[in-house]
Length: 184
Image 1 (cartoon, one colour):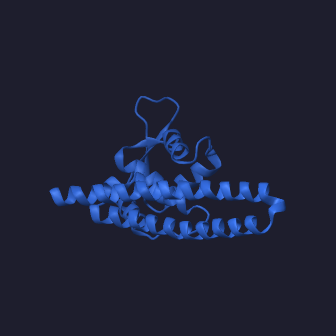
Image 2 (tube, rainbow, N blue to C red; image 1 turned 90 degrees about the horizontal axis):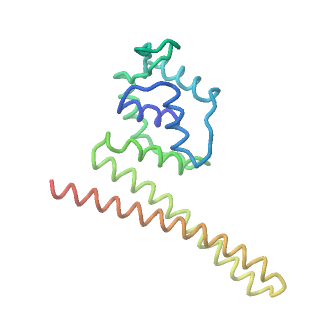
Image 3 (cartoon, one colour; image 1 turned 45 degrees about the vertical axis):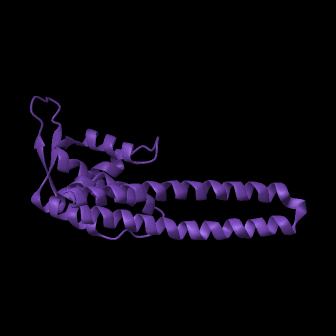
């Protein structure tokens, strides 16, 4: 997952490890820090795969190395963008990382990724809607725990509202991309 984000960043320009860390941290949920213990092994892994290379920075007495993407890295980036997202604990992040590299792929691939994300969210919406319905039935059947169920329903409604907002945003992006393609 981080490989995709790093390669995407290097598609635009060469960068130091420090700048790549900032990009990773900004792509994650707010205030999530990326340690050197995560960053540098990942850079080493990408270098050993032939996806990136390093050059000494000009005008730098500290020996800073600047990473650049290779042709193999561009190929691997395209492969990661095309690879389906596994629905695990980090699936939402994986789609957000893919969106950061969307401008390097064609409109059909962009729409496909956005539609896949939309479908995953629709499945979650179905599950949470069922949970909300079940909690409402439990609340109605047991008047002694209404405060408990009330807050369970509210927190579930928060998740549902968030999912719907994401789905609305994704649909708007899909519509915009399709509209731009028709104009071309």
